[in-house]
Length: 214
Image (cartoon, rainbow, N blue to C red; front, top):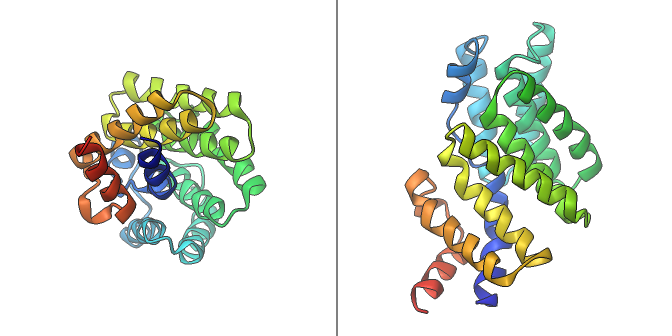
């Protein structure tokens, strides 16, 4: 069981942070993007993130934010989403201090504007950053907050990503059985919410096979 957890979590964790290619929450929670080109650029940034092309994602997100700033729309729902993509690219490049500062701002702004999908994503990213630097309690607080918002706002599609992060936390700080439970939850629910087999790294497929053979 330990092999399953250690194989699954590190490689699946990155996908758990930013694989959210659906912008429908923005359309439902605020004004539309300033123009179709900007919407396409935001989608392009997320494709780069999923492909682990963090430098390219950062360039696209930075250019997009410059345009939004010029139009006074950085803190619109669309702008906050673009800020999240920027900070996730920064975090993946291991610039943790800068990422923490920017994520805290995104978390605050998204909460103020009721952008709960973005807020959950920011909290999951903050949980990971705190986990990396050994802030056990802060990491768990962010996880608990994300989970509460997923349940309260019926954001079921975000549950697999929470499960990945919670399994990682349990593996490091908590209970091995809980870590395995949440690893299984991630594998069970990911396909239901669009994390297709083609998007899973080989280690995740190995873990699925190992769990099935117990």
